[in-house]
Length: 342
Image (tube, rainbow, N blue to C red; front, side, top):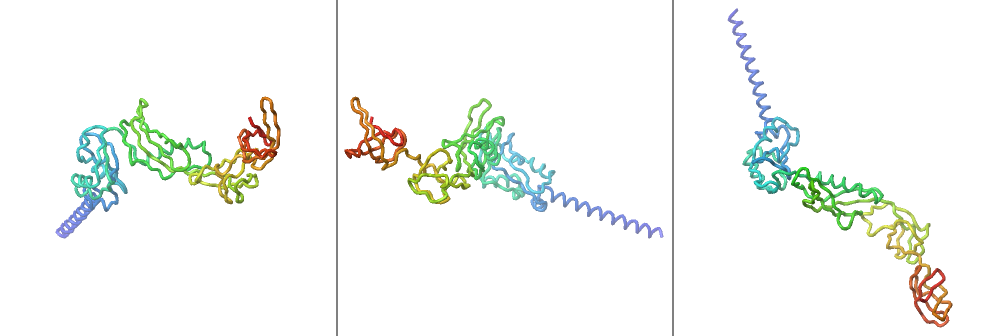
């Protein structure tokens, strides 16, 4: 009976040891899967190593965590282990960026990371700088939009920035330096806006500049033709309607609807925006109008009827024809009924 009990006890103890061994093996398998040192394990846990396009490094050798970050379901302990790995030698000169193209980068990572290099997501190139700071493209674009937004308030309408063309990164010579935006010679107006991003030192000096641009869409309600309008027609209130347009895609400057009286200088189709170039001020005198022609000399003062041979506004000089002598002279417009030869 005792032998039987001892045999059963021994069997039970062996089973428990087997279970413990299996549990330990399972834990080791999980640890191996989570550990970055094994490529197959990383694939199982679903995260990768993204190499940045630009990075700041310190020390004599580049560390992986300085040029990369994990993406996906990250095992932080595993990343801390691999991120601390030292790679190649850092740039020997401070503030002198070093560019590594994709093939060279892939080769270097394979040398220092072994199989783990297969888990890296590579950029087209990696730029590293010893010291200073780096501003990546997304942050550059946010800075540009934040800088330009207050400046478009004077334009009115609904503004939207899109399709920013900016460098992938900008290295700063000092983390305390700042960036500002310098608008190009065409100023800030709807359409493609060119500008330069400047690095400004603590003493106010411009350290360097990089070119960039952004598309500024500006939606506004502008005057349009309520019907087809022909040249030389007087522009009346009933001839005007309003349409909402993106000024960035208008071929010319839209009329602001102010001033007048106006007349049509170039034909405008129905519902088409009225451009500033489409209109001109209504002339005081029009071609064919009968006017009083005055000539004042030292001893002679003539006042005769004449015919205007051209349109003109106040103080403009136009040709007129004396209706009596049929002689044509140039006279300056005094008012809507009078011209004078000086």
